[in-house]
Length: 116
Image (tube, rainbow, N blue to C red; front, side, top):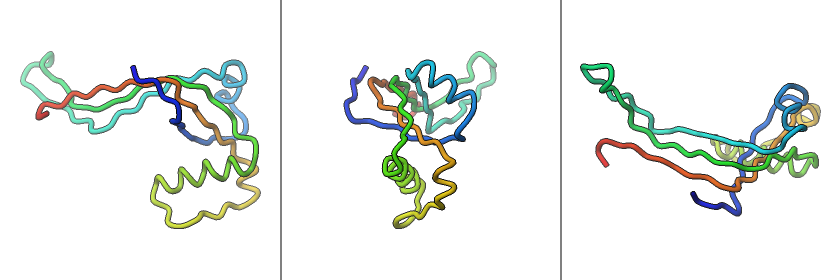
């Protein structure tokens, strides 16, 4: 396991709902992500497999309340998905969105590749 000090994950959601109700009760989080997934077919069902890379980790969720924090996190997301320049947010939309931050406290990864 790798201990992390400065890794953050940002996401957003509506301002009401089950997710936020659960976070209010317990701010612990676990996350998992996969990439490079490829199914490896075989003649027999039990011989099927997959190539993949994955990461799993733990952290603490914080709801970003201050507008500057929300904008900074949303800018990070927009940049990640290729938005050029500085995004402009409609004030009513910004007020309606909840932005969350997971401060990663630990994570580990796994890779299974046939050709590596």
